[in-house]
Amino acid sequence: TELSPLRVTLLTKCKTVLIRITCSEMRLHHNSHFNSTLLNMEEAAERIRSHTSLLQLTQEKQQMELSHKRARIELEKEAHSSSRDLQRQMDLNQDLLTKLRRLEEKEGKANQALNDEMENKKALKRSLEEFHKQANDKDNRHAEANQCPFKVLFFFTVFLADLRKQMESAELKNQRLKEVFQKKIQEFRTVCYVLTGYQIDITVENQYRLTSVYAERMEDSLLFKASGAVGSGSMQLLETDFSRTLSELVDLHLFHQKSIPVFLSAVTLDLFSRQTVV
Image: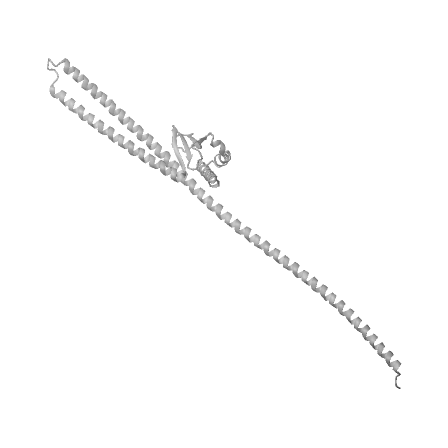
């Protein structure tokens, strides 16, 4: 049967309404699925950012640990090198101080020997002069009686003149030896000053003043005194205005470590660092 126009119109409208309802439901379903997908993507992106941040932090931590390790290795190398240089300086200072003491002992013995020789020659000269005087007195007393032969007097006169020449030659030789010895002493002192950085002066017997090349003032010097027998190597630091400023180094290196070379090296490094900072 044919549908009436009214029924056709109603069916058409119903279909249209159903289609619209279906499209709306499809859009709603699509939007819900899109929102869920978008949320999942955002969560995945957040996880990726968190993982990237964690990787970046881990990489920075590893880089910092590597830098710290390299710095520690460099510091250990520098400390080892400084310790080795300090030990070499200590050995050199000890060797030079030992040589200086031996040289001073030789100087003292040489001076004593020269003094003894000069005293012996002076005594011999006085004896000969006395003998000559007595001979002249006897000659004067017995000249008229011809009791003093001329040949004997002439012999002693020539002998005395020859002896005087020998003594003058010996005195000249001794003077030259002293000059050579003083020159060698000065050369050795200069070498000690260049190699150790300290000028060593003898103030009184068995007492030595050490002045560093890096001292800010000439008064900044150290005073040592031999506390044992000559050549024993036992030295004692005497208190001065400058030594009182080095109480920490004195306690560490002299009282605890009991090493004068280490103390002198530490003082040198301390004075040098002050000039470097300035």
